[in-house]
Length: 86
Image (cartoon, rainbow, N blue to C red; front, side):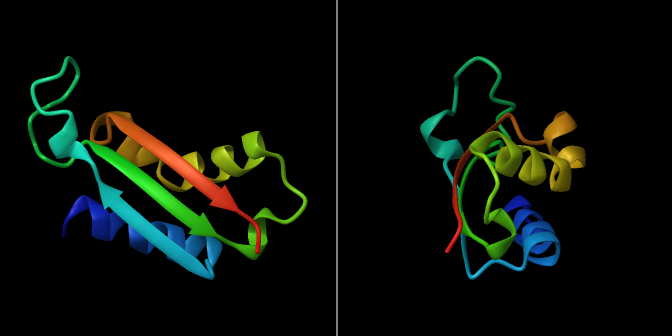
């Protein structure tokens, strides 16, 4: 299973998003310090979920980071988040 699939699966089950796009941006960072060279280390998440209603940006990022905590430990080097409520 690809990292994109894992991210999509975890965010879908945890946040029931109205829309979700996970973009692998690793190719933009190949050869940079901290890039493991796996081709699956840098991602951008664009997500819209009712779960974000009334939450601050910090709270939303914490929610996403909790859901992806295992991957953020050693597989994902960078995660850009564009999240909003509907």
